[in-house]
Length: 248
Length: 297
Ligand SMILES: Nc1ncnc2c1ncn2[C@@H]1O[C@H](COP(=O)(O)OP(=O)(O)OP(=O)(O)O)[C@@H](O)[C@H]1O
Ligand SMILES: [Mg+2]
Image 1 (cartoon, protein in one colour):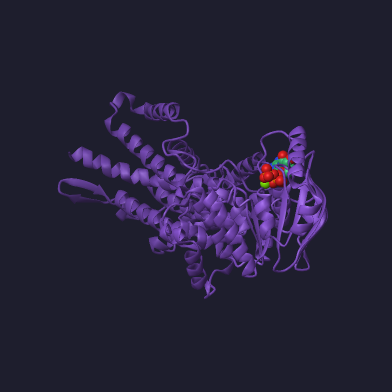
Image 2 (spheres, protein in one colour; image 1 turned 90 degrees about the vertical axis):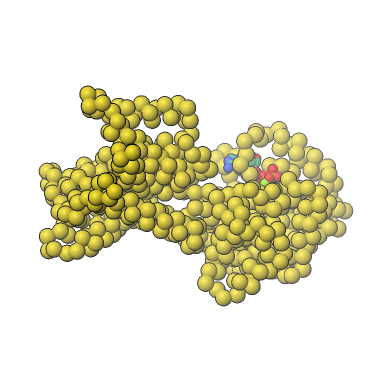
């Protein structure tokens, strides 16, 4: 469904992702893990058309995404929930959701989908008329996911959905992703919580300083890589050559 | 008491024009971080459209609608032709473009019409006033208040209820995210310019019928007023510009009414003094907004 080949993304002189190749098949749940600054968010941003790759190809459902705007890529069925969740604080919860359904406006089964989002996230129904900026972090994450689901994405990309959530919310988040996967949604997941992630995914890629250093099924990864080591190593290396002030 | 009610009425009338002026400027600023210096010329376009349409004796409403449409169309055209091509360049490129568009439109009026003021026919009823409990209510003021109120309500409904309106507000929050949801940037920006143009058109009609004439530089004063209202009210939100507009209108009318005759000539100096005091005390403007610092390419 999604195939990336030889992807390189740079921000000025910084090469954030280099020679990255990965694929996601229909119905798969694939994770992209790695230390801070490894290039995970950048990879997702490149897929979604937010940043332009300098080299490499990205194809989605057989179509090249090169040169397409992020709205066009969204139109093809790719939904990205960014690290910062991208909630519109000036809008109500309901209006946020309505924009999630933007690409399907006018379709008659929308009401049903709204109902199912509200069923999945009852707090959103409760807060429907409330300003989205007043929601807690966990509630905002639910809103971001509900909003993305309303577009009925063919590929759902979640960037660190458990970031900043309470332990109970983290549990719920992993359950939810697992559930969405079982329901047949194709998902590309970026996570810091590697242990939990490897419990639910079909396959994972390990990214270190912009390069792929390992990939495979959770069993393979656990066997072949000292995940904790790669993490610490990656983090130490990352701290060495990047400074603060990333936008993620 | 009588003077006070008179004051309220005049302040409301002028304030609501100022509020619309400021809104038209801020609706584009919120999305593009662009202060559109060609905004005043949209008001001028409305004036000349009125001037061009008058004569055959068409109903006033038709002239007004024609003028508003003209300003809206020109606004959308400037976006399409001038701003869109430079949007991905620096913000400075857009600012310079807006100066260029402003000059171009002014010079077109100079060439095509005349550098001299052109009188517009003002509906005579606007100059009438209604006696009401010892109070003289100018029809002009009443019409202004009602029209601006209706436009504000309509705009509020548009921004709150329609999908495109909601998208417009979302764009001011986080344009990148809006595009990730599949909303076309071009469409949102064109809508913002259309609304801005329509507001300029309404302001233009009210302004020009107040002055009774249109000149190529007629938009300069409204632009300055809108800028001041926006800065005082707060750049970062629609509410701020409305507050700023009404405040500035009230201040202007108040000084006009209560300043002693000898210093009346310095009214604007007093206005600027108040503006400066406000900005010293609250540099971010009176109403706190939440527009982010990012802008869309
Ligand atoms: N807008 C930007 N401008 C310049 N450099 C950037 C920008 N965004 C990211 N980078 C750099 O690119 C590299 C990869 O960043 P990225 O956000 O993709 O990492 P990440 O794996 O998502 O990290 P984290 O786990 O902290 O979210 C980092 O070195 C970062 O400093
Ligand atoms: Mg990241």
